[in-house]
Length: 241
Figure 1 (cartoon, rainbow, N blue to C red):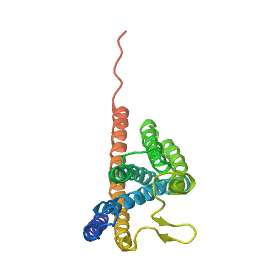
Figure 2: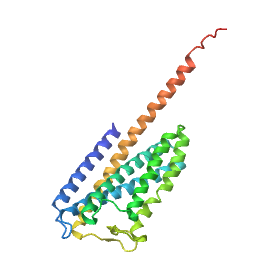
Figure 3: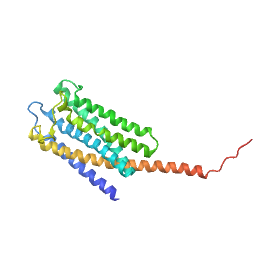
Figure 4: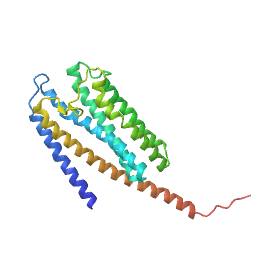
């Protein structure tokens, strides 16, 4: 009951934050150059942040599994990877809708875009490998290693616009050196609220998916134990010469 209450409260807080972000995004003034199109930033940037957060979570939970050997950390790592893939797709889609009217094309093999696409290969492979290994403990160990190594994507993707010349704009929020907000200050609060809302959304989705994964794992274990019990209790069939 307490777990359900926590999930409900977290879901309610997420919904309120998302509605607030939408309302602020709709009333934000159009950009001088891009007009209303700039409002895509309030979805695109938080989606990218959430994918970073989710991939970082995959690595963190994988590390916790290797240290503690508790299956719940493996379940959370898997859930976080799934969320990361989902919001990476959302980031790419939002970026394409933004790119067409500003760059004249939906896609270009810019360093930031290329590394983003490669993350789908890495974490899609992570999820695929999980389906190919039957032994739960071995699956968790292999997945944890891949998840930890995969987190290297986050700093590489973030710094791609600094390390390689391309068409993608520099970081909206600079975290290294002297932190600064590169977009117009009028959009700063909207982005802050949207990013906080997407952070709550990550926590909510992680909790719900983790609960579902635990139930699926418990059901599979019951099925395996049931089959084993049937084999143990069944009499041997007589053989005929």
